[in-house]
Length: 442
Image 1 (tube, helix red, strand yellow):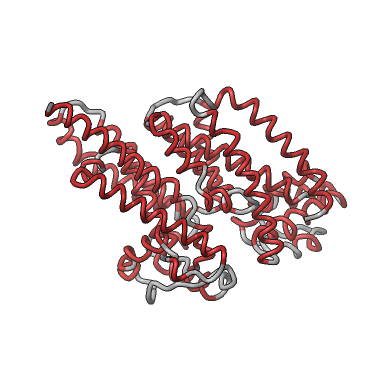
Image 2 (cartoon, rainbow, N blue to C red; image 1 turned 90 degrees about the vertical axis):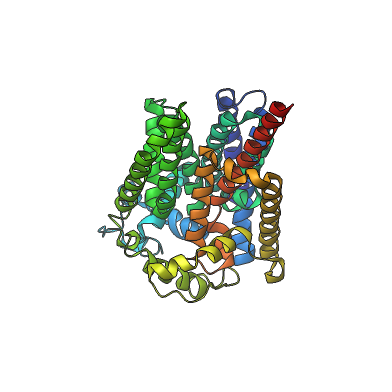
């Protein structure tokens, strides 16, 4: 925290709130307006709180490598030479004559995905005088817009559950905290919300507008650049959502049964092609390398680079084979959704994470118990399928490749809203069906 934070940040907050106020009329109605500014305020609070945590609790970390040891150096280069500053801002990690004294001080310069975040922060620094908290507020605003668009998507599908939907998407503590500061997770969370909104509009509602296509392409590009493994989990689930919605719209039961095999083949083929396409430019995410990548990443985060981020955990030995990876599926999903347990807590941050995980477990048990025999039938809802397939697949992906509770708390935030949404839609689907069946028997 510096003097400039106390001067520039309030101005930026007022600017963001003014823009949000102008957008509110187009992005809210009488029901949703009550959630709009509280959600934005919490995002801004989370952005500032995260910076304070990294400064005074961790004493450094990724967010400072993105800004203080990253974007601020590019900002300084702009002051010394606008030409060099621009070349650094648009650099892809290549050699730049005369700029070595700058980028040699940037730890993430040769890491394309991390340096992308540095470049985004550097661009914002031009307007905030490289004020950490002010730049973080802009990151938070981007994440808020993405989350709000995601909220609108599901609100229009089930308006009667607006309170639950707002809680799941806008007010989960860990998602607010880890998805608001200058981190990769903030950009990917916001982009994922935008992608959900645009993909639903274009692919399911068939509302093909230039603005939504641009938003679709932009969000895919951001996620692909920063964390392409999110797309590996998201695109197959999105295709399932799209195909299942097509099948659900067919009135004739006979025709629906006839179409299902064709749709299944299309789903498998398109899902496989999407995964192959994502891993094409990065061998780590090729299908035959995923198991090895998970093994290397898990051991690196658990016992080396991430050893100071929190307590480690283990799912047993990873040997780099796909079959061994699949064997870890139940444990990996469990650790992402429901751990750390209370008896595994070793510091205050873990306690908060454990309480949230316990709440998620209790909610899961409660909804499963309330659904009883209609649980399986509720899975026939395309939206339930999409949310649960993506969240559980992603839970497996991060759970099996992290091995560190501190890092996992941050990495898993994209899955939490979707998992909660799956439970909410499942609950309401079964409740409405039970009401219909009761009315019919009467």
